[in-house]
Length: 533
Image 1 (spheres, rainbow, N blue to C red):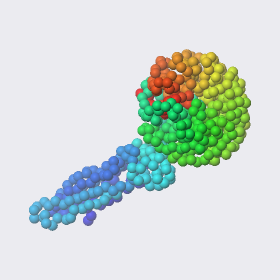
Image 2: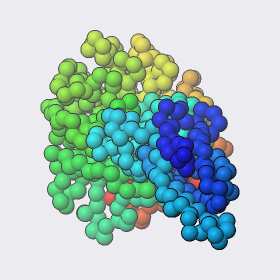
Image 3: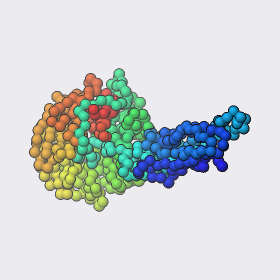
């Protein structure tokens, strides 16, 4: 009879993490009547525990060996079939039996994990891999059951009750992002500490500083575009959010790059496709997970504002037009003509798009029927992207007036003058219904979104606030031309939360928020990734 009755512990049909620990058992026997059997077994992987690891069997006795699945211990290593080594040695009970002992035994125990395939293409994943070699999918293991998942996924593919990540993806900036209207529900700390930055330190020659676009935070990645004027190149770079490790870099064919002040990219959070448009009108689609180019297209005119991905199209503002491109190949489906230059990103809700234009009008378009729905005049031109929330479109003019338009009709629900010095940054809406408007007067102005009443204004800085603020619960972050980031706490007290370098200013490209992480850029050429403490 063999020493052990089971040499393959097969968990492949299990749904790990749904209840009690998953186990397999085997029986180890000592069939020798004159020797003690000493057994040792070790697991080479943290996600399977084998016990007892060492034991001695008296003559003609048995022992149950247990293999228990512990996939939550896998951490950042993928699960793959492994071999556990079992070694057994017979020890004589009496000296007279020493010469007739059976030989030592070495047996490989096969352990088959429940999920060991790529969630995208199904290829086998070697132990420890973080990226599928066949399709390039980046792998994130479930912290509960250890199953490999894509970076895009929020819940585990094996069990939807297992949460992979809770952060809301910051998919476009400034303006236009659904999470900008309502924000994240939990307040964050008022102090900001640097997690990492790129580059680590500013260059000594200011002319060599990179000009960054607004950063995006999604899937645990930081993505930003930059212009390197000294080298005559422009590129998009992706980093791992937790460590700052570079994931990929894509050089843009147009060395003019994205317009640093308001040019912005957009990510579709469902498939991870990234879209960007350069100042010269080159539109690029990139797989954000792999950094692979999907297509290039071109629109006539200069692109100063940000692009925006919708379920079937990409919206690109260029000169006095809003271009509707097909997401599959970049072909131009339609062109909406406006009465002036469109310098900002549009906002979208379902099939409705809204654009705030230099001709002092806000426009609404039906993307399903490719028609203009309405246009409404304001008291001045727009330099900031509009936002949408619960049937209203909010937009601020360069003359300092904030408007709420009825999204269906374009009727003005209310208008409020907040500063004669103008507003050049998109407002942000908190979960409790307050619009936070950053003014060129250095104040944060708070408006009741439903009525338009100016609740209060808080002096933040002596310098202008040209960066769109962001909200997380009752915490509001804003950047200033004095080079500092400020936090407005629950009691509306202003705190200087982070200082960059002397002479720099927080770039007007926009802030981005992902959980407790805030990203921004400065005119010293640094991309900052900060953690709220």
